[in-house]
Image (cartoon, rainbow, N blue to C red; front, side):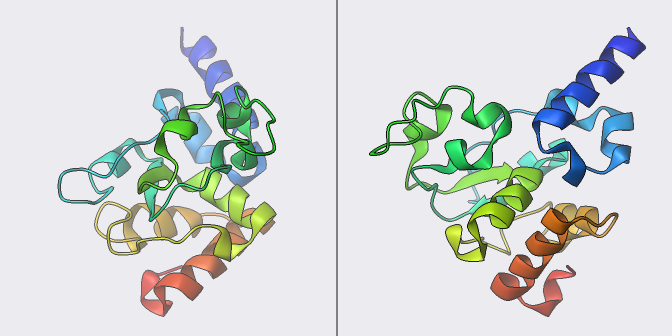
Length: 163
């Protein structure tokens, strides 16, 4: 069973832009329980959701092409319709709403679309602000995607972000 779990985590990470995901996340199986994220909690934060170790970045407004642009499992159901690129995905229901997204999807999306593509609510991200649950995880490794995500967070959240 443990070997199967490891294979699942490895396959999941490969789909979720594996090069940006630290090996420790694969070994602990953190990605195995990943979901699509969700609405901020009643207090308007991602603090509780971030305890899954993944859905820690609160974006202020879900773009109408987030699923198709972030890749991996998010894009699998996308219709390819140029007027609504996310038609057929879970993202379609949440366009324009705040959303707790995966920190690895955030890194990949910033890498492909740029920092201005999504606006982060810094204080409502992470387990207690963006420095806990996002920047601390990003600081464990380095890749082009992670480095661009850290720079984006510094631009949007300031040096106190810890990125």
